[in-house]
Length: 167
Image (cartoon, rainbow, N blue to C red; front, side):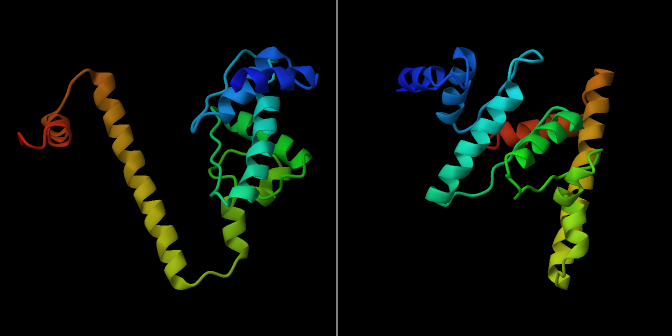
């Protein structure tokens, strides 16, 4: 049970009661959000959680784990802690990393050094184009929301998605 797991972790003196509960709760869900004020152990919980998930991944043959952080700095700090724990099969997606240590993990850096057939380059370019399109669409939607006006285009899209039988 969750309570039993929480007590066992707390008794090990590795985690306090709230950290133990956060770890066990996160492990019992498909998606977890770890939040709290600075210095409460969010990064430690994340690293411990990652270690448990990676051990289970080897046993279960599951797919990749996606970790999202609110800032580039928080992501770099978290990934640095994973590297400290000898977790090295990391791919960092996106820009903004200031860590020399994480350059080896950056997706762009990994792609530059590897041979890829033309169809892979095509897929990469298609993905970038899609990303640019979604980013532009998001920016337009953000402008619309900030202006407090709603164009027919968005009303039409909403109706098509939410009321297809009536459209």
